[in-house]
Image 1 (cartoon, rainbow, N blue to C red):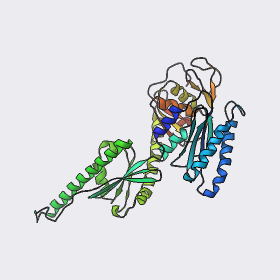
Image 2 (spheres, one colour):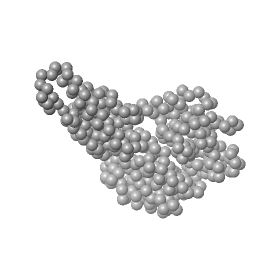
Image 3 (cartoon, rainbow, N blue to C red):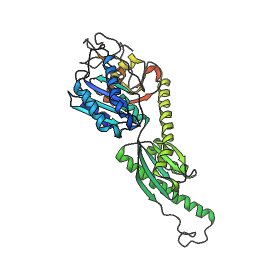
Image 4 (spheres, rainbow, N blue to C red):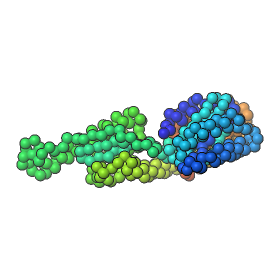
Amino acid sequence: MISRADVDKLLSSAHASDPVVLSLYLQVPVDPAALRGLPARAAGLLAAAAGRHPDGPGAIRVPDADRRAVRELLDQHARGWLGHTAAVFTCAQLGLAEGIALPCPLPERAVIATRPHVRPLLVALQRCPAYYVAVVDRRHAWVFNVAAERIDTVAESAADGVRSPGFGGWYGLEAHRIHERVIQLARHHYRETAVLLEQAMDATGPQPLVAGGHADSIPQFVAVLPAGLRDRFAGSFAADPHTLTPARVRELAAPVIGHWVTAREQRLAAQIRDLPPGGLAAAGLQECATAASQHAVQLLIVPDDGLIPGFACGPCGTLTVAAGDCPGCGTAVRAVPDLIEEMVVKTLADGGLVDAVSDPPGGVAARLRFPLAAGVDR
């Protein structure tokens, strides 16, 4: 399972002065018999990437060493990637040759640039996140972690229940007092389960949380979650905990996470739309490029697919939609295959956040840390 640390490692360890880094996203068929056609599909994507480079067809070519590296990675790993989108990164000049199976399908593409093209990796992390599932009833709890097709049991617990109708000798207590004691024990058990979840997330970092169990148990469990966990709560499903297998838990939790991801994307896009123009919001390609160049982006909202060519200044890093001299330092700008990717990399380097949606405001939008400086293109 890919992680954000893998993305950061790619960006920090592979950067060239010329466009010699190859990024390939390729759908691996489910049928092993269809694998023999994979190298030809990869070659077609590489040829298309070279042909659409902003400097024009023939301006760059894929070195033979990188073609061989792609072929070797596919030969070695394709059978383990069946049914997945594979991300392959090669650059003989930098000693880079890496392949990763992604947790969800993505459009095929190849990009030749000065660094790995990571925007699809971020989309995969966003659309198919790792998450926790807590399956609970009043006396038992099972905590699972789900990452792609893998589900691991992180913790199990069983609370002390009512050992006898008389609670250890207090035979004859009224029914409502017995009921109150059961509720108290259940609340204690739910709090202990929340502690297990917090301890698990200390190791993995915050992840979405799904709750499963009897319909009457779930609200009681959610009610005792501390604020940090409640903020990560994605939703729930109803089922008898004692009939669930890990595979069934993953099956029931997957649509809950899918709905949470979609709702989150819609909420982020709406928040950007609601910001008053000209203040702490930017929309459109040039305005967002300017914001990224000024290190002003707190949250960048990008499309989940597509490439938009643009230009970047090597010495000062200014991004722009227009060829010619850099508006910042006057140096001639160089063409880049995807201006949005350049914004993404700058935003991440500045400690900002990046999210992908299907239709961002203005094609690309941003929430800013501070207003853009006066006298610059917006």
